[in-house]
Length: 298
Length: 272
Image (cartoon, rainbow over all chains, first blue to last red; front, side, top):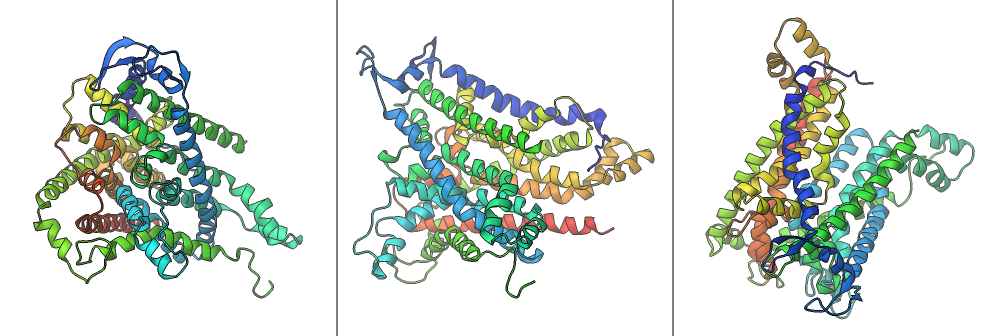
């Protein structure tokens, strides 16, 4: 148990003040302002008019024609984009888990000095510019790129397979972007796992896969959940993978929001509302996570 | 124990680990290889050359890249410096400030920039700057970067501070050192590696950022990622691959430095 030291307690407020002020003023306040903006009227060349309206949220659900006077019809386009974002993020989380869990387990069970090297190899790509990584993926999987040429040369495919601009490409991009996030928390959990538990089960003739499924996985579950959160949350609001690897048919929330603020055609209140809904989704996920963590502590 | 039976061993996990690393590195290595391709086409391989590396420094677009690189570097250094100072103060306050009301709120506030999706931060910051009439440009990028660099600088610093026993500071204070002296001459030398590693991580994060920068940069100011993104939108060109390779190697170099500095400090510390 680390002792709670209070050597700097009298200066505490002064020490904390800069971070309180910076984050409060430049992040909390802007998010609140964004909430306000989502209820304002749009200005046609970007920006807002200070008149309260629900138009931005209404636009998600209903189509009222070009001039807004037609009878409202339920429209699915935006709901679809949100739904696609959620399924894409869930898919990326699933595939990261499939590859990430064995990797994390393997690394955590190495000898100490080998462990360090493996872990370093997994961490390095995370620190490489995400844009560069996404561009590399685009280069690799494009129609006449190395992947298609390699597969053709091997005789596995006859003609190049179109991956770019498909949901598969976006999925691959998300998986590739956030894979290290899955490995690290699971690694930390497996490293703390007491293998005496597995040995006890083995002495009682439990087969290895049963030990994995019934003992190890339940014990390291907090790490698995943390990894899933770390992949799911950034995937949900991802912009680069859907924008560079996908096309108009693979639109995700990130691209939808981005479009509202770039150039003159945008709609700021609508973009603010979309960002608000995204933030809400993330908060729901994080709250569920915090709940599950506090329950597992008891 | 039975021969060849290892309770920790699962068949196939090694293969999946290799697959994981292969997936992580293959695209990067392929781009690195192709950046040495002499051909102006990105599809056909001709011969090895440094042509595109010369092109980034002397070609038509070199001026644009130089300005972007300068902007990226100055913003990253300034943002990481401010964020590291703020994060160091916060870490000392949080970990050496005893228990206080609002401790968990303070922690939530410090980690907020990593919890809020980047694109939400980007939108909120743009709206905020536009509402208060703050001109978009280098300064707005800098402010935005400081905010999201804070948690990245905070993590290694606080982790290190947690590993330092309080007895050193208590001894210094018993010997009538002022709090500043205690921090400067007792805590800081032991905390040093954590601070350096926090600075380097914040620096890389700032250097890498694309989304937030693209929202708050206004027109005319470009950093390396926004310049690369703009170029890639018109198709991947060989000079972009050379530039990407350089940036990639730079990031790897920094991470390696940060890692070894953190390690070295740990070793000296654990020796009595």
